Length: 448
Image (tube, rainbow, N blue to C red; front, side, top):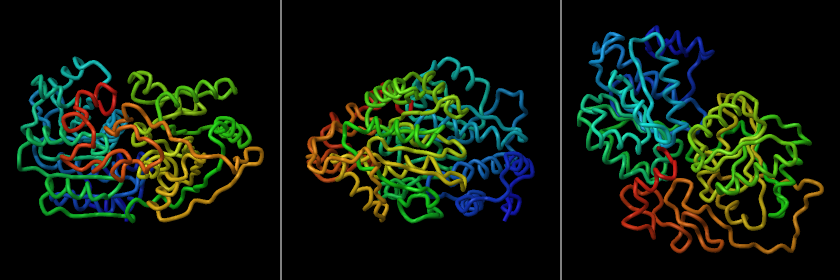
């Protein structure tokens, strides 16, 4: 099957072909016809399977063939499609896809997110935009200032909806939904198909088509996964050894905390390994610079917290390293999904100390497989080492999760952190007034 077989406009097919794509992926094969039919859609697919094109292509087709196009120089445009994403990086990535695939259409697009000045965005919106890609916090800023009009939205897309729930954006999303016209097409795309997502879908979607192209929370089969047991204080030397001995030239490394990311970059620098950190405390300029240099191959190592897990889309990224295992098992799937994209192979390595054995079991339970273990000679862990409480991220990487005491499973049982994680309208336990406020979330740089 080709993209033209799916009924897409010739200009869209031409733009897709110019990008080197000739055959749609499974999610695209199912989602594109469903969106073209005009009904609501709930779609779940593993990260890296072409989900973005699965909604941008049919959205562009519907808007370009509805007879409501404007001339390119008019300021009378009304925003007709709105795409909400959880992070700035993902918003920029989605809007770039819209521009690339819509290059031959008389449609324009814009992206708005926090961390940068709002005035240039106001001017952009004043000139008229057909398709707006936004993070929830910054969109609310514009709504409160009266600089954006959502009265003419025909298509709403919630991209990475599960991540938005994890990051505590449910209240922001509800405020946006309340400002939209009731008659519209709703598309909910998610890397995982959790019960929380289904609950959100029940309240948002009207008799939706449902697509799930892979089993729930499965990991991409082309990714080779393994763990290296190691003592907690030998992780940095082991990582440097792996990078140098294997001659890794492009490595994405995930740490649990922002401080840990910064410290690791400093340590690798002393080893002669170039690296930069990307996390919520970094300015948007610094985050953009680090990501750009990493994509271009100028940077050997990019060290990231989970805020970056959904916004990094790099073809042929060969290696992902979990320097720390994630607090929440689902984040493991998103992290390693940065490699093995678009049919390419990839390797995901996790450095696991005795403190993380409970986390490892939760991950293996989630993905329904035991990860192969390989001890690296010279880095054998102490068999008598005792687990210590893990210092979880303070202020959260973007999920309103409270630091956890001891080794109880994060994100699950009462007493082990939060309860009801991500449930729409149900705040994490222990947060003031029902969870971190939108302002608190956004002040940390997440999704804003």
